[in-house]
Structures are given as structure tokens and as C-alpha cells.
Image (cartoon, rainbow over all chains, first blue to last red):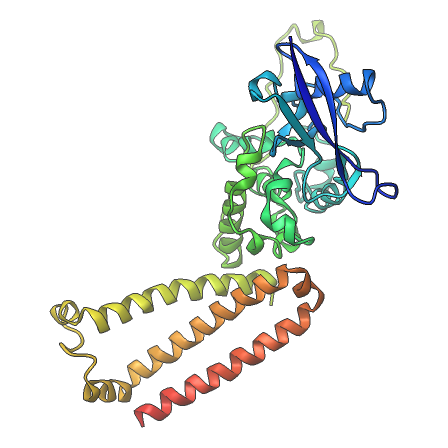
Length: 268
Length: 119
């Protein structure tokens, strides 16, 4: 066991004039994460601290914050691995603070929604009530697979110099998702997305800070560069993508087909 | 025109500036190399050579193209930098108009000079 001082940035909009640090000394054991420590503080020392978390295993992206000056997921950061006696926790930069360590990501979630982050097809009937899947080869999957690991935690936004200066810029994870869906062989929606993303594409200065910040190893800077490329090719009319077709139905099962139980009703 | 097309022109202008500058560097500062390739002269900076060159219509076209590419690339880039700031966002349309006017004035001045020098 070791005692560690946590310096937590506190701020309540409407009550505090400006953010300030408050210190908490707590016992820490091996294997404990920064999120564990924050929960300990909230449960045992100061219940007024606001933190946001859900899965506690680096999947939901709720507990993103600045730990010792670096963008990290609190649930994914081992305290003793930081090798510091004093650990500072701040809310994410470039985002409005709701309270203490909780930031407001709604603006970026709206932007994310605006780029239509889903498969778009001409056949509305099939989109609404899919009968079969669209065929996709492993190489077509690899074109976007790493970008689909994004958990929308917003840590890329905190490090992005363009997000710091431009409110209109869509942000790294939003543009990465625009690329993820646009390059998907099942998707036909690039011409719809380009109208929304065209103003943001040139604004990326390729600082690559977003890729360094990403806790899931996604490379949004690469996605934006690739998005720039397909946008240029599309504008010049030379962007070509093989569109996946609906796979043909499976062959009928043999004479014993009546023995098999009926498949459940589709849930979507 | 779509906003993205202005940016694509910016990229194309940058591409041409690179090759025009490369040509300028080789022509002006490595004349022996260019001479070996069958172009240019051995002393491109002599007064009479400069006058002779500026009378050539191919050079005039190259200069004017260079002027267009440089002005567009520089002023579009400048506009983007200013518009990203808080001040720029506030007066975006005004900045666009001002920058366009400055670029057009400089282009007219450059065009006039190019035509006048050669005679």
C-alpha cells in the first residue's frame, strides 16, 4: 500500500468563478486505477466530486480526462504505473465543463450524428427490413476495421489544435467515422456525407495529436488524410469503390429440414 | 462552386508552384545543367538575357501562371488561417472580400508589369 495525493480540478459553473485544485490523500494498492481512486474519494472523503463512468473497462469512453497532463481513460490508467506521488486529474480540454471532471460532449455527438454514421443504401426497403447480409471480403473489412474501434471518448478532441480554435471543425473522431462509413464497401452514402464534412476536411493541419491521444489505438489523423484523398478523387470524378451486393440465399437444407427449430423473429 | 473545390484548387496550385519553382531554380541557378538538357542559356542573369527572355511569350505565360498559382495558394491559405481564429470567424465574409480584393489588385499589378517589361 502507498499513499498518493490526488489533485483534482474542481469547478461548478454558476458557483465558482474559475476552476481550482483540491487535494486528497488516499491509500492506493497495486492494480487500482485512477477511476478506482476517484470513486474511493467520492465514497469516503468528498461526495461532492463529479465524475462520469460506466463500464470501468475501457469500452464506454465515459471516464476520459487529463491525468498528469496526458489524455487518458481513468479506468484504464493504473495509479502505480504512473510512478508519481502526486496525480493531477483535470477535465478534458476544448470542451465545456458540466461539473468538476465531467465535460459536455453533446456538441460533438450532434456533429457525429450529422455525418450519418451508418450504412446508407439506395434500397430503402432492404435497409429498413434486411432480408440478407451484404457480402464483404476480409480486405474490404480491413480498410475500415481499426476506425470502427473508436469509442467516442472525446480524448482526441482535447488534443486537437483545430478543435481548440475552431468551433465549426467536426473533430477527429467524427471525421474518422465519416471515413469509416464512406470507405465501407456496403455503403453508398459518401455524396451525402461530403456536403457536411467538406468544410472541415481542409481545416485539419495533420498535427496527429489525436492519434497519439487515442486510448484504443485508432488513428484518426490517418482517417482524415485518407478522407482528404477520397474527397479529392470524388470531386475529380475518379473515386471508385466496389459496392457490395446482397449475398444470394443459402441453399435449401436437405430432407431433414423440418427437424430444425424455426429461427427466431428478427429483432431489427 | 462547392467549398471543397476551392481547397482542391489550392492543392493543385501548390502542386504547380512546386514544379514552377523547381524550373525557376534550375533555370536561374543551375544554367549549365539546363544547358546540357538543351534548354536555356549559360548566363540567365545578364541584363540582355533577361530582356530577351521577358519578350518571349512562353515566359510571359509561365510568369502569369506562376503569379496566379502563388496568389491563389497564398491568399486562400491566409484566409483559412484568419478564419480559424475567433476574430476571423466573426468577420468571415468581410475577410473573404478583403483578401479577394487584395489578391486581384496584386494580380493586375503583376500582370501589368509582366506585359510592360517585355514590351
